[in-house]
Image (cartoon, rainbow, N blue to C red; front, side):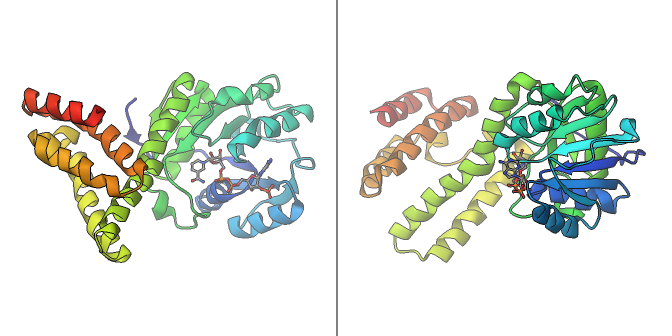
Length: 303
Ligand SMILES: NC(=O)c1ccc[n+]([C@@H]2O[C@H](COP(=O)([O-])OP(=O)(O)OC[C@H]3O[C@@H](n4cnc5c(N)ncnc54)[C@H](OP(=O)(O)O)[C@@H]3O)[C@@H](O)[C@H]2O)c1
């Protein structure tokens, strides 16, 4: 799955947005600013659609039931379904039941966990189908194009729809990777580990330092600086070179003491330490740490 930066596509699209929350409004606003035409913006209520159109700065506010499905220029028309994941199938069903005639229209969703196959009810309408998922956390809708510059997007779907997705992502200066539809859920699990579980992991480290009497702000500053350095090193040299600490040195005594002293904290902290340390043992093996020491560490971790 190779990633590549793409040039801005020459094509101008007519974009309709179905479910204009954080991602839908962001796409609408940034792509409108790049010269794409926002045709209509649909939400469950007209009031929500009006609010979204105010943020986007373009488009006709409407509801899913009232959205004008006649798209006069199908080959350059794109319908983005940006409802929450659990509503994508129902929304596609609702659109399909309205009997759109969409030969050559591209329908996209932005879910990381779901593939474009969930849009299959729109296939008989003639639509091309794909998903394009940004590996970015949207706390709110974004109005600054620089925020999305360089973000990696993962796409899958039919060739024509993927071509459109590449143009849109290229316009946003994103980077594209392709994935097979059947891998999307594991791909999303990876994103959850790197994007969400890292937050849990850091909160464990913060709590341990706070237990040592260090103020929360100070603990956060100290540990985020440490982790940022590790991430930079991992990016530059890979995780094996970046690996440091007692397990990479085969330091059995220190690991045993960590586990003993973690008992004063909630059991989940010890469990996190033990399970992640087992992964570290595997990495330390690849780094060439002494086998005997690593075997002893593994025994302590699994006790
Ligand atoms: N947020 C992120 O960080 C992020 C990152 C990458 C990908 N994504 C993906 O982007 C898509 C949109 O996510 P989002 O974060 O933008 O969602 P969101 O902010 O919650 O917005 C969802 C939109 O869909 C509408 N909606 C809510 N519940 C609905 C339902 N049950 N049926 C139909 N419409 C409903 C909402 O408008 P009304 O309530 O007014 O109808 C709202 O405009 C999802 O597939 C998500 O996985 C999100």
